[in-house]
Image (tube, rainbow, N blue to C red; front, side, top):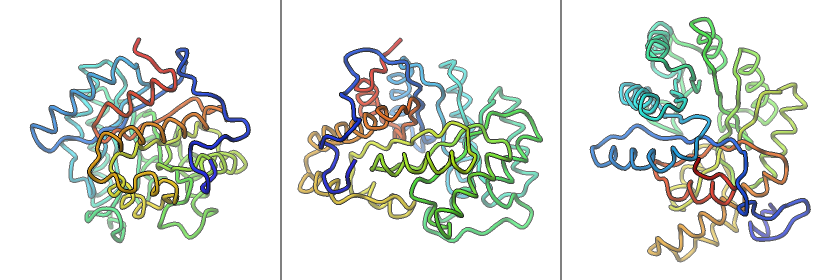
Length: 304
């Protein structure tokens, strides 16, 4: 996808939308633990809508500084028990000693949770704050992965950054950090969201050249609230192309048009990735089903 022309331009090798026939793709969906009763109802309506798509797994985030630890555990356990689908718990290094983190991991294992998304994590103040290592904690995500593998044979996913993590000195240092996480025992890399397919494809190629041979799964973020996503992108190191800003310009009060554009943009991004043999997609749902369901439909992923 050229940053100059945007998602509706044609490009060599890009195929038509594959929605005309069901596809055997792997999809996974990320949720956040709800904070209110209303948010909980919305979450479980979303889960009910997306479960028939038979995702490979659901994942549940872990608030900055571990602020949602109990709610994450409760949500993961309920997802696993009520849907029968693999549920992955996010776990971070922030603001906790190794022993405390190890106890959380053992509690997940005892509850039947076998999949952890191991992250360094955001500082207690959230993205954009200064990270500091707990004096008795895991130094980074690679150390956390190694520690988890000592506790039990967890399946472990880790994060990757097509446009590099904002705290990394450069792209090479960022890729070296990912390699350490994989060498420590991680099974999969899920990327930060991005809006240019070429950023992901270059990252995938560079990872393979660096000896990283686990699946590199693109993280897809449907954009319905442009201002919110633009702010988040600025904090996590993802660039927002000028054409994307132009698409949402003047639509601040037009929710329905924004959602149509969001589905088109994300669907086209996935189409470009499919044309390059990407067959796994991880969706940041923001606890809403409609856009993710629509994009999966465009990809040919249908209820089973």
